[in-house]
Length: 446
Ligand SMILES: Nc1nc2c(c(=O)[nH]1)N[C@H]1C(S)=C(S)[C@@H](COP(=O)(O)OP(=O)(O)OC[C@H]3O[C@@H](n4cnc5c(N)ncnc54)[C@H](O)[C@@H]3O)O[C@H]1N2
Ligand code: MOO
Image (cartoon, rainbow, N blue to C red; front, top):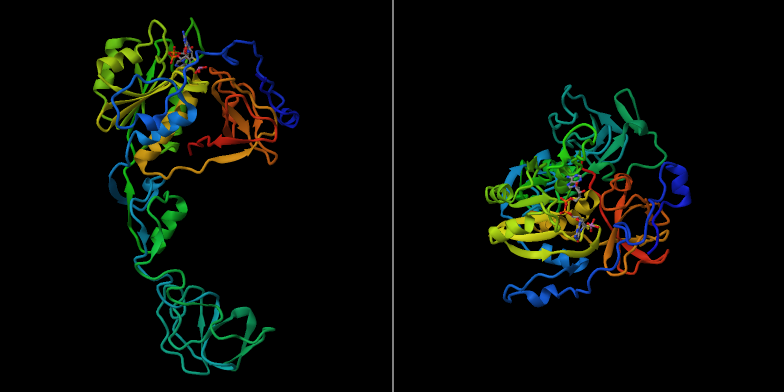
């Protein structure tokens, strides 16, 4: 196993970054685990429920993506509330764009070759949003502003800087003779009414909102985004102040809600704190109405790790129970009831993030109807930490030369992640510097 650590230039930029110390067999460089051969997800489809064994990272992602189908469409206002949703049907134009022939420049609308007789107009005529001038006779001109409706029979727009008016006569002063059609934006240049502007599945971005408004749309039909509840397990967790008396701060309540929104969840889930008690956990899960409940902690085999017992009591169907990835291998995915899922993330903070990236991301994307992302790959600019049997998710910076590990990537650490531009998926056995590696997005949360 290699040690991870920031490259020399990075260390110059962030002098406080040093490779985290590692001991062989420590959680940062785990010893080999049992020789479970992950089963083939495809081969399980339609067959009797099998005991779920640890899946490879890719199999787990596929299983999570296929565990659900997109939620039904809803019509929402074409405003910021729609941002991040996927269009459930193509966006069509409610109007021609431009809706009328319009001037692309400030100057004069002219008819035929110059010079032109300048016609007087009232104050509003020729302005954007103003009245359209009457049909323009051959050899005449009227003043016009950018965006104003073009008078009928106008053949070009002469820019203000390319003309001169003397004694009511407009003459060209530009180097080039005025070409017919110059600086006219013809009606329907961008699209015709009814034309498809964007396909179903397009993610609503600020630009999509702008286009929808320009094209005369007030509402958008999008996939409903999955509601998510977050259950933070662990009696040792504090919500303020410094760790004391063996208790530590909850790092996941502040981290996960907007992280999960970045994956397609509807809004930021309010973290609910659940005591380390089987009855309390089972009751909380039974009462949960969200499409997806995400839990943190309690996935392993400790005396107060009750998640598996709770799922058994609820007769939940385990779909993924352990994934060959470090950190985060005790993560799980189960179906609580038809149309309701649980993603169990480990308690160690970076392990929880790895679990969210592995299981919550594909599940939420499917439910939200978001298209599967094409994997982004880039070369490893340096040796990346790796594991002999499992994939490793490693916080990296992404300068032009490739992925550079940030260090501080132990399961309980967030210091590397907080600076990360991506999470490198290092396959079992590692990648040599220069070899390509898949990079997962780190949601910005804004
Ligand atoms: N016998 C075994 N023990 C453990 C195994 C294993 O395979 N066999 N796996 C280890 C790995 S790997 C991980 S990861 C953890 C997973 O543990 P749990 O999901 O059961 O989580 P907890 O035991 O509740 O907590 C683990 C650790 O993380 C801290 N924690 C929990 N929640 C938070 C939070 N919201 N913010 C910050 N820190 C949190 C907690 O205090 C513990 O220190 O199990 C290993 N053990
Ligand atoms: O190493 Mo564990 O896999 O921290 O999640």
